[in-house]
Length: 304
Image 1 (cartoon, rainbow, N blue to C red):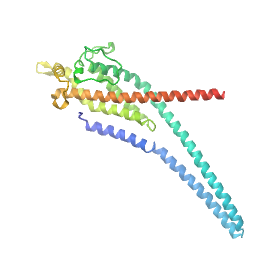
Image 2 (tube, helix red, strand yellow):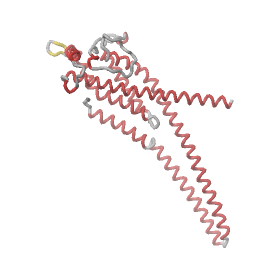
Image 3 (cartoon, one colour):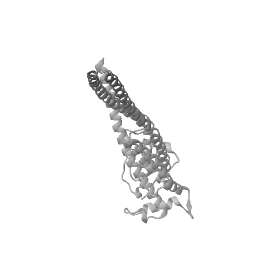
Image 4 (cartoon, rainbow, N blue to C red):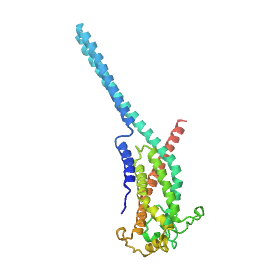
């Protein structure tokens, strides 16, 4: 169960909807306008040819050369039909070529972004796995989609195991990198049109939404490290709550402080699923790009 931030949900919902609508309607508005313009020019050209032929026909008819009119009409109409079919065929070939070009350009843009995103993903995954793994178990550092319970998060306030995270807790470094990854995915969604790879956009948006919905709960959980409840720290109270929570515990039955931990648990689960889809889609794109480059190299060798 999640408690959404309505303002954040509305903002990112509009962003996601605008992407999906653009994809569903065939790409950028400028592309659709250009297609309509080309169709109108073709129609005007055909109308102009027919009008010109009709004018010549009237002149020949007035001159009493009716047989010549029929011969002219037959010849011109045959030419017009041949021209129309040729234009349609060439237009389809051009459109197919343009579609492949735009798909390639979009893929290249995504791959460039991914070169920046991938190191952040690696750092996020390691920190996320430290948060969801208790001290008595070995951290599977690069496990993307893990199964874990609330009780597995009991040591999240402990110090990070990485030297680069010195004097910081596991939950703190996780919060830093999950927000950094959120920013990278936001830039990706804003910068790429996603006409050809909408699945990647959806995966990135799912991560963004999960992170946005869980931001308040994560902030509250991190605040427990510095908050006192009487003579006890909130951190120790929450840790005891986590340890005492039953395996079948539910969000609805949890104390208020523990509810935030449940929300963070849900957020991490949603992030993992979105990230697994993102990485799977990117891997397919990299393979597609590699095959296309191999074909291009083969083609060059053949011509040499």
